Length: 67
Image (cartoon, rainbow, N blue to C red; front, side, top):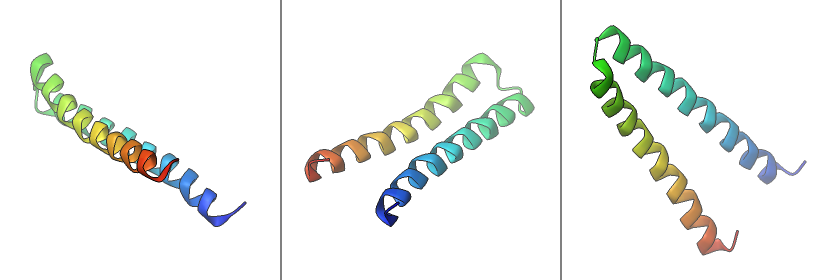
């Protein structure tokens, strides 16, 4: 396997794992702080916007480079 392909796969897998771990942290934070449904939704919305920004950045860079 070429190092570039390995790096690409590890980036996807490890960033996905990091996002899942951050989701667990946000869920635990919401539960311990008794944020309620609305507060939990706001916390996950903030995390989701960060993830969406990462995905949009990847798509834009990929489209500029021609995938």
